[in-house]
Structures are given as C-alpha cells and as structure tokens.
Image 1 (cartoon, one colour):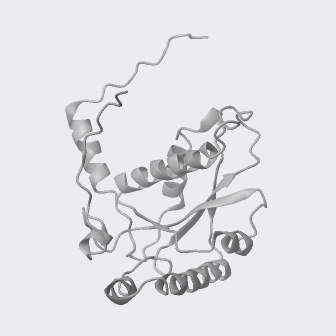
Image 2: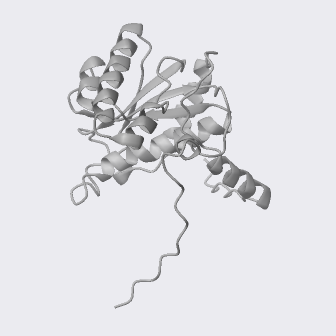
Length: 218
C-alpha cells in the first residue's frame, strides 16, 4: 500500500483573482428562470458542501430536497403569513419600501432545499460542543456557504428565504424532532445577473465601509 502523501495544491494569481470574483458575484437570488436543474449537478454541489468544516468533525448538516407540490405550497403560504407579520412591523417610507421588495423566489425556483442541523448527531462525540453548543449550527451555515459558492461557480443562483416560521416548516415537511431548520434555499438559473445585492440596489441598506480592526491593547 502506498504511503505517499498527496501534494498540496498551488493556487496561482489567476485562481485567486477568480475566487475573489466568485465571492463578489455570490448574490442572494430571488428571480429565477423555470428551467430545470440536472439532479446530478445538485448532487455534485451537495458533495462539495459536505467538505465544509464542522465542530468536532460532526458533519451535522441535513439537506432535504423538497419536491412535493403540496409541501411547497405549505411553505409558500408560511412565507406569505410571516411576510405580512414582518410588514406590520414597519411604518411610513420604510414600510412602503419593504412592501415593494421581492424577498423570495419560491414560486419560480425549480429546486427547494431545506437545510437542517441534526441536534442529536452522535458523530464528533460532542467535541467542542460541550462549551459552545451553537457551533453545531454554525457548522451547517459553513456548509450552506460552501454550497452557495459552488453553485455560483456553476452559474446557478441561490436564495435564502428567512421570512418563515421555522417550527411550522419542520412540521410541514415532517422532519425529525431533533432537526432544527437553519435555511430554506431556492436554487435555479438566475433570471438576471448583478454583482451588487438587491437590497442595496433598491435602497434598503448601504454597504458598510470596510474598517481595520485595531489590535487589542491593555
């Protein structure tokens, strides 16, 4: 049996420039074409997402492909109810601006993914979680970001729908009781391409200026 160690990759200037461009063009997409996405491509992206870091190597992410029209309709109704409640929390110009925003692509996106944290995951033997249990959910977020960047590299768009009642989604999808919903993702081919966030483009919020963090001095 060979014991040779694999050669670490060398990331040249061209790769680094391409990666920086990928990060800049990773957008939260809400407008999708209805063209189907090959199941093999989704499987490839999920395989890459499984290489994300996780606390204690517990790998707690659970990706659920939501294909049932009935379940999708329930999630869409969930969004509409939560969105009305959110709208009621704003007044004046901010309320009008919120009402005009497109905040999801649930009816257009060909792929729906519910991403959950398995709170009862035995893998990892609780290493790192006894002191910071929240790192289990953070690990799932790392997998989502990995999936998102990999999807963007393939030309796919991803939208994270957070205006939902997460407990209701878990019931609607009949998920295990020890799974926590972290994200509900819409995935598909973007209807339009932008390198700036839609919320920035429509005046909801401006990008913060980058700041240098000074070393802590005592």
